[in-house]
Structure formats: C-alpha cells, structure tokens
Length: 538
Image 1 (cartoon, rainbow, N blue to C red):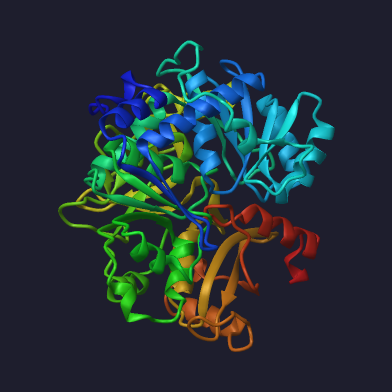
Image 2 (cartoon, rainbow, N blue to C red):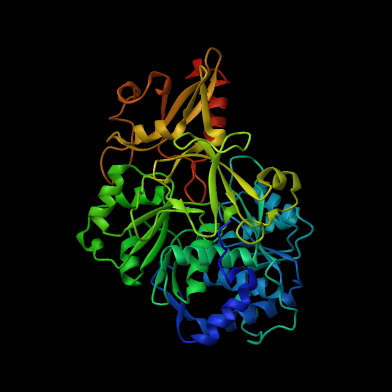
C-alpha cells in the first residue's frame, strides 16, 4: 500500500484549525455568499474563535464526547461552526439532506441516536414533526434568524459564549467526527463513520492532487451535507491554508459570475451541474475566470468536454471516489495526460484494482469491480454505524468493495462502466447501462437519460431508456420533437442488437440525489407501479 498522507493520522480537526489560525489569523478562510447580496468573510482567526463559542454552546446544550447532533442545514456559516465545534468536544455531526421527508428524517434521527436538531426557520415545521416522533431529541435549535423569540436561537446564544478553548478533553485522530448517510439506492441508507483522521486524509489527498496553495480559493457550490463539499472543497482548503468561497446553493445562471467575482481558482462539480452550465446562454466573459482545475465525477460526453473547454477555459479533471473512500482513490493527473473520458489513475495513498466476483484480478481491458486498499479510519471509512454486517461485506481483508464496475485501458486509466448491481441481464448477455446511456446522450435532441433493466418473461430483462429531451440549448425540455422510434433507431445504428433499448419513456427530469446521481430505484418502482410488472403495460 502506498504511503498515507503524513499528517492525516496524527492530527484532529480542531488541532489543524488552531494551527492555521495561529499561523495566519488574518488570512480569509470562508467567504459566504447567500446569493441575495450579502457576502460575509471570516478569517482563520475569526473562525477559530467562533468554533470555540460553538463548542461552549454545545456543552451547555448537553452535548458530550460521542454525542450526535443532526445538521438539517443548507450551506451556511453555522454548518461549518457546528462541524468544528462538535469536533472540538469529540462529538459527532450527522448532516442530512434538507429535502428529507418526515419519515426519512425520523429514521436518520433514530438510527443515529441524535439528541439535537439544528435547522433554519423554513424547516422548523419538519424538525418539530420529527421531534414529536423521536423522544430522544431534546431540542431543536434555529440557525440564521427568522424564528419566533420563544425558540432556541443559535446566533443569540452563541454570541454570549466565551471565545476560549473548552475544558473538555481533546479528541483523538481515531475518534468519530461525523456520520454521513449514503443516499444510496435502497430505502435505508447506511451511516458512514468518518474520523478526524479520515477528514485530514481526504483533504490532503485532494490538496496534493490539484497542487493547492494558500493563494488558492475553492468554489464550493455543492451541499455541505454531502461528503464532496466537506472532503474535497473544505478540507483541502483547510490543510493547505487556502480559502473557500461557499455559495448558499448551486446556481447555473450565476456560477461563473460567482467564480469570477470571488476570484476562485479550484472547484468541484458533478456531471449534472456541468450539463446545466452548458445549457446556459453563451457569455464570452465567462471564459475570463481564474479556475485552473475543476475536479468532477460522473460521465460527460466527448462533445460536452470540448464545449466546456471552448466556452469556459476551466481545465477539468475527472476523478472517482465514494463517501466511504474519503479522498478520491482514482483521479486524472494534474500534470501529464488527462483523459477526462476516464476516471484517471490511482491516487497516491491508495491502491485500486479491478477484480471478479471471487476477488481475483481481471485481465487488463476486462470489466471488474473496483476494490480499494486502505486503512479503515484513515484512508477508508471506519465502518457503517450500527451495521456490522454491511461493514464486513464492504471492507474485506483491508479492501473496500465499491460496487462500481470499470475497465482499465492499456495505459492504466480506469474507465467507469456501471454499478455492479446496475448491469442488465438480457438473453444471457451483460449490458452496461452506462454504455447505452452514453450513446443516447450523444443524440442532439437529448438533454439527459437513464437506462434500466425491467422484467421480461422471455429474455430475463428488457432495456428501458428514460429520456429527458430538449428542443434547443437552454430551453425547457419537451418530448414534442423527439420520438421513441427515432431514439431506438439511433441506438440500433450504434449498438449491438442486444444492447438496443426496447422501450423509451420521456420525462421532464430525472429523480436525483443531492449530488446529482440518478435514483434508478425510483424509476424502477414507477415502472413497476405503472405497468403492474408487465412490460406490455408500456
């Protein structure tokens, strides 16, 4: 196994923050843009003091070492203060999707054994409904103002707390700092245990991959409740002594204006927001940004890569990683040849290989599941919270089984194929949904698509393409100018017969997770419900 980042296994989140605050107290750490004209800048020294105050407030609210707190928060300064304030006490944050339903949030609160919910005024009703169902929850705390005076107000209370270190014992690098629930493809997400050392390892891996320096500024538009914004954007900036321009949310129409206004040099995206940005009206001034590296995950087409470079001049670097792997184990090189239709090469600190179902390495060029060698609690997750069976199934003899299939080309670059459980079985042939999706997305009338397998009495499974059409760049998609026959014919010209979809359905949009992954289990459930399990219903 390659050497792990040097500092990651020996330091904690508060220790790292304190070191940066002592070295550069006046250097900006976070620039928060609420997208309504209010921009707040917080230096390393100011943020360090705010974290002290937050830690004292958490203590007053009864949070102790190992205690869990729910963060039902969008991107905001309070999220960051609570993250590091809890870490200072050895407590654990549980960030959750702000779009969660009552039942989803109830499960996360109950499973994580959380006692506090931090939220904003517009989600108070949701938080109170969940509190009424979960006896363990002691309090709902409102961040950002706008709440009735009778409620517990974070800003008012934290302002009266001392900006001095709390008396609680310092955490250790192996202590848990967060439980990040995977959005997943099943009804019950799994809670990924993230240690202090995990966070530092993730930050150092990304900072090293993009050559981050104190002069850099990360543009963070993805939600903080997901690992990407925490691992890749915030932690990489912190370990390098750089800064983060934190946007309240992703806005395709303002993305490059924000990048230019805040002088951002590095960013992180997914394929879905990349497509949204390419669908915006062309503005030549957007090419005059300072972005020198935009790391991204998930597939884009060759045409989209060319268009991105032509319009924005912001170099892309595709990578591959999971909530469970902390940093990205596979990434395109910063220096050297980037093959952005691939996920790249193994990153320092990780060993990645492709194996068959028995764990044997596959021959170069063949499809295999990505497995990653690392150290649990450092370069890999510590485990799944309260789920030893899932932990044992995922981490076997020091290797994390990702569930993602890929192939390596002759030069060792990894090319994503599909989720291992997303292969379609048709008449004895294995069909990778991603290969069919790539062909469909090349059609000029297609904005996006998802390909799934559906039951077929004769051939095991039939191939169904769910397509979001478009009439033209930047316009609302519609099915008016695109037909099922046209798309099937398009595929038939480009794919072997057994890979051609038998059915096409049109939708205005695809159901996605908070980071843009298509929720195919929802599509399958809809098809099952609409057809009663028989494709004749289509």
